[in-house]
Image (cartoon, rainbow, N blue to C red):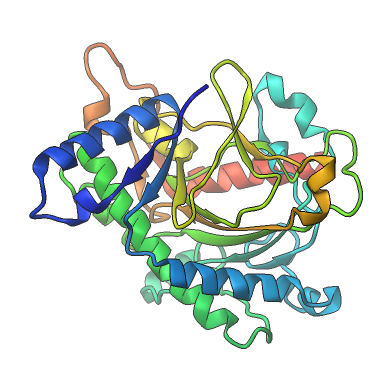
Length: 338
């Protein structure tokens, strides 16, 4: 069994605090990301009150009649607005040979609302990426506070992501601000994933979310507690439940960060399991999932401290926007069967 550590980030935020505590935190972060690619964190500025208010607004939206939710329906393969139940299959883009069977599984048992950047960027960036990374958000009429709450949550989650990148930089032997100019106009997105109670059995091979890895730098998840939750695939190929204490966040790195670190850190396959049959009717679950990604024009080249005489450079530099687009295109090409 691989243990996902629960780490208190207070030592990072308390600049005048105990340097030994900070050193210990950085060692724990590096070890966990080398071995598992997952952390649980507490002691962050992202408040439990805002998390609960955002979760309540999200659940209120998903409680609306389908006709109303479809008024903000995302265009096919778009990344803003509502996507209905069983319209996505997260395992479809996986190309590992041991997941090919999962790619043929029925689509996943969740519905989603996705939100992109909420900041105002320069005219040149908007002109270049206004239909992709910075595509306009769309908002439902109800709940009335939905847009304001989600924008606030996005901004605070984005700040937490930048703080975590500061921790990551120190753990990699870099200056604290090493990532800063690469993420100051991030193309991150916030996904509200709703897993309804399963009133009918899932189809053979169907899961709440199929096995997949994330694409970007890091992901921050605030889940509700209910049966049928997150699992990671261990090095031995077994599926292990991830338990989350109230008021904490699950953090994992994505494929881009693994490549950026020259595979020093690992992007781990994970999924969302179905509840046990006896728990299906009480299994409603919601996750606020913040997918952090760098600036679309950032160059992803192997981090200098991750390359040495014993660890040669594995990857050629790539533009972050092109990297993410290739991942998304492969996903949707697999979904369409082409």
